[in-house]
Length: 522
Image (tube, rainbow, N blue to C red; front, side, top):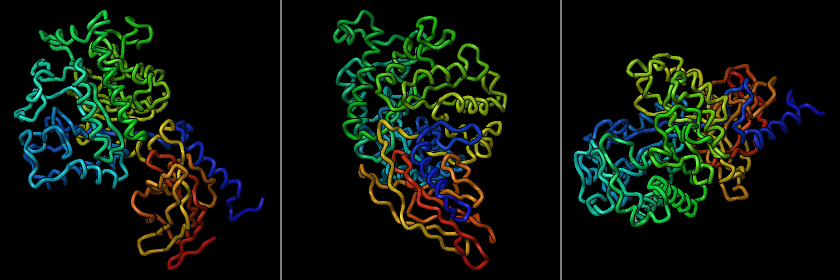
């Protein structure tokens, strides 16, 4: 076999095959950091938990604060954000049937001044940094306990017959078909008007039980509950109808849009259902929130499930490892992201296992070994605090190397074509690589971003090891490698990646030798 300066044709072909085939998988050889891993953070807006930090902040300061959050999470190593754009019968976006949020403008229904569309801005800034943007909507709330203003345009004011009052909240009555249709229309409205990567719901369906409180839906049950032996079964049916209805509507609008839910971590306990997890009593989403989260995954109504496994490895009733194992066995071919309780780190929690600085690193080690596709951290503010140095361990160890978002082959499995005309130019501040856009793939997809791999002449090129990724280019067809040294030889490959993160075959190798004033090819 003819050699080309230490890199054989077979080696190049093996690199191409790795990109085209193995790089689509989340399975990673144990000696490599993960090439694909979902790394996300929730940014909560309700009661100004994460953003904006004040409901009276001017728009320019809100924009600055949001971009700083993005920069922080990008530096930590995240590749997605989940931004709460509907917190309680309100909106953080202009094209909404519901009123502006008081946590954005100071009073519900008051429009921002000067007028702007936060969602458009957040999307632009998020995609500019190569992060996915998932629009997080709360499903059940119309008035929150901490609300200080309620607009006349709030649905609880316009349709009081749709509402259940419970523990200081005003909530949707999911038993009403018109309520389920409104929620579906509201959700589809976001997907139709904004270029989001995903639609996301949290764990709030029927309310968490409060002492002395009763859900007053008896009249609705009498009207619509025929054929159900129990109100609990009927409530679960209502939520099933809603989840499927939203799935179907989003699928019809945009089949490639991701749809997922982060339910309470425990579906059912094994002592009441042999298919449940080996957890000991306590809350379960199926029995207490009337949310049959396992069914949604099994039926294919969601693309990912992100259960809130906010428990320590040492918590006996609901051990973290037990829950990761159970959900890995019950994800039915869809993505399983672990909801990680970063907010619990430190000495303030009742469970003293969270005092251990190794608690969350241990959890990340475990979820990586047990068939999860990644993690979502709650929440942004908790990561900013860097309790017990956890964020330092992410930045310096677990997320030190970049990771591509895992693919969803049931949505899109066609990779983009290769970039064209790869060139290198020696500049004062580094080596500039430039190339041309690939032609559209067979499904019409263009490149969404590019991955730049660099090797020494002695290395065997592989697309499987992210330590060889020197950059990911999200804008244009140029990349500056600032970490080159005079007298060194480098071998470059570049791949195109589409919106659903399918990676195409590489262009390359481009073999260069850097000299003080010139660039040589070898």
